[in-house]
Image 1 (cartoon, rainbow, N blue to C red):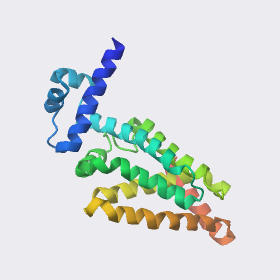
Image 2 (cartoon, one colour):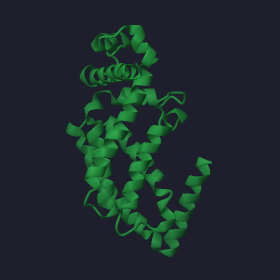
Image 3 (cartoon, rainbow, N blue to C red):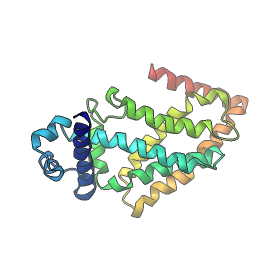
Image 4 (cartoon, rainbow, N blue to C red):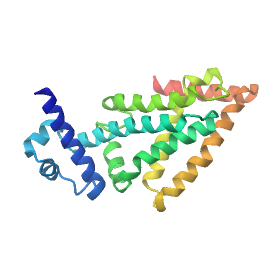
Length: 218
């Protein structure tokens, strides 16, 4: 019985995500999702109270797929710049089919009380899954990232990724090529900037940045 229930839940989720891709977020109603999945409207609402919950499901699935693609893309890469570039492009590849409703996703996620707000308690599992991707990106870099940066850097890179995602949402260039160029240019700049952490004067500035970052998380 539990297995059948999980299958039905997954069917509803898969149907919703397919409709988000095919016809867009606004045109996808819970009634249409239920019809597409071959279940009653009440059954669809039993598993997902609203479209917000379905967007949250998308968020979780995107992180899982991003992790898988990033792991493959990172294989054989050494420098932080190349590893960061591989991870960011993998994320864009996973999100690409959903670009048409990216703005709707942002409108949903930006509300403080939204279950898909990436900073909310409800999004903790998905956020941690995404942070793990950047932890692996940093931990496998050669030469190694300066030790004092290794703990905080994954979260700072994740925040950069949030900014890149927002840029991608509103990027109307073909294939979002401007976002791809942003990634290709930003990754080596970030890596070079971090390499300066070994210089005493610059190191103090980075210490101040890290202290500020930690203070706003407490």
